[in-house]
Image (tube, rainbow, N blue to C red; front, side):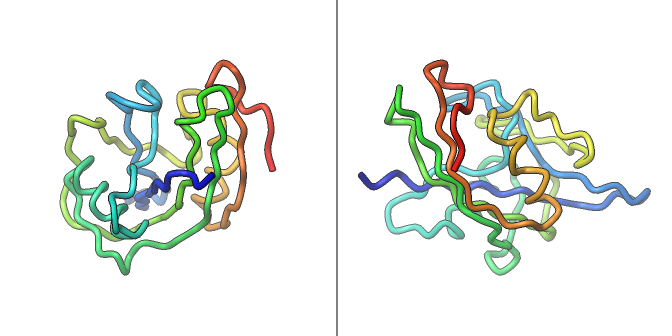
Length: 157
């Protein structure tokens, strides 16, 4: 079975006092509603993961990024044996250059979070296992299986 492809991008900045921040947002609708997530979504027909990330960032935050500024940092496979339609493969990117100011969309309300204080308790359960590393430049290649509650990771690898 070929899993649907999605993308997620973490826009990062350094504050004047030297703190690293990442742009995240609370998901307003669809899969993961209520969770704090990175910017991204499904690839459209004929679209590459990079093309989708550029489009999704603009749709969800109003920010414009150049494809050449996206740094690919890995691939995550999500398996939901109790709701197979949710299973997917996510291409992970980080970006430190863009144009514009983040604005709320119908998908999410973006805001900056201190990387040292990520809101992992309000994110998908897998984020605590890999997101801190990605935000410091460590690539990720992981597989997560979620349990019957559709929220908890029950297996990795």
